[in-house]
Length: 98
Image 1: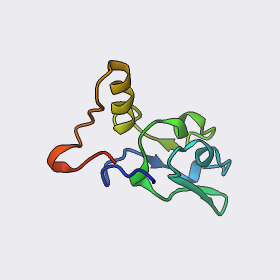
Image 2: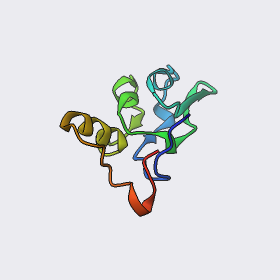
Image 3: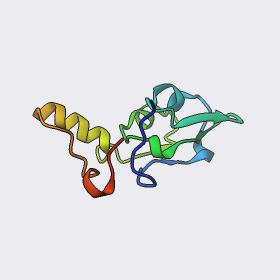
Image 4: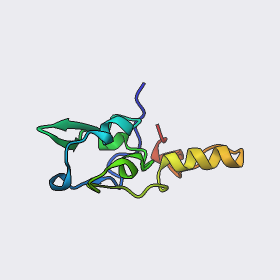
């Protein structure tokens, strides 16, 4: 099952004109947010982005931006480190992280 997060909140941005079509974003993204079309990356599923930052760290053209550490991925990691449940403020009335 593919995880979905809150709609339209991911900070992910792609500057297609900078993209060199290497495909690293496709390779490293754990949620298949990117694809390559016409030798350029494109965002195909922004709402699956967990803002982990793997795409940014592996893009040799600096064509991708994301505020890593602000999304559900950070909440999960912090929960593991603290020994608590993940808390990304998206539970309760507003829905859940997944």
